[in-house]
Image (tube, rainbow over all chains, first blue to last red; front, side, top):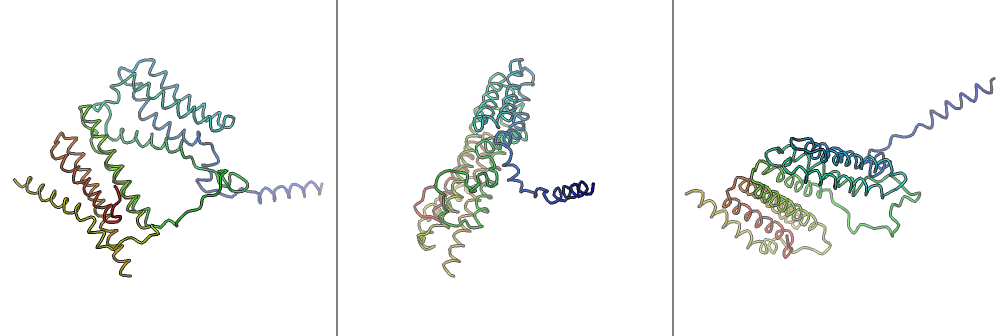
Length: 254
Length: 64
């Protein structure tokens, strides 16, 4: 009897000592599969951009069925990930994107400027962007292999340490790029609305590309030329800019 | 130390130019949405030139 009591006490002690440590958020995310991670933004994107289109006025039964098929593909991807591995992601990614495209083709007016307001449009863009990010680059589990390695090839070594200031450059560029995506959601003419979207996307890419170049210029091993030489190289563009500013001021002052 | 100060000056100038380019692109896109094509063209051109100037300040000869 005393032995049994002693055993129970030991078990309690073991249970107390084997409480799993609290893992960081990315380690916990990495423990679930990639399809499961992508399912959350996928559901969000579906709820914001696909379901309202399928259930809008004029949405046919076929559009509703296809939109639900998109949800089913997400569920199949999540459920079968443990057995199919990375192939399960193909089901959820291609299933959701193809069914969504079919729904938008079946109900083309549902995403027109008159029915899609700016907040919902931006929310949908963010949802699809997060779905793409979570599908293409899911959070990896900590120490997935016993050696701590995730890829089979030789370890990649950084050529230079990343400085702290880089996040300011890239973060500012991302803020500007996102601010550009808010413009032009109330344009009623489809061709002009498309042109505005193309221009804002191109401008956002140009800003992010330039910010990356500016940030990387601080990491070059070869010494950069002096400030005077650099300003001299930029002088034609600065003069051109000054001429544009002067021309614009003159034109608007009339 | 002087070199570092000059480097920071160039970096600050590049960042200011980049922010200016962002504002120009925003104004250009807004004008394009309002169907004010001449203003849109002007601001987008200012944005492109400003981006190019920002890149040239930090890395002469690089393409934006």
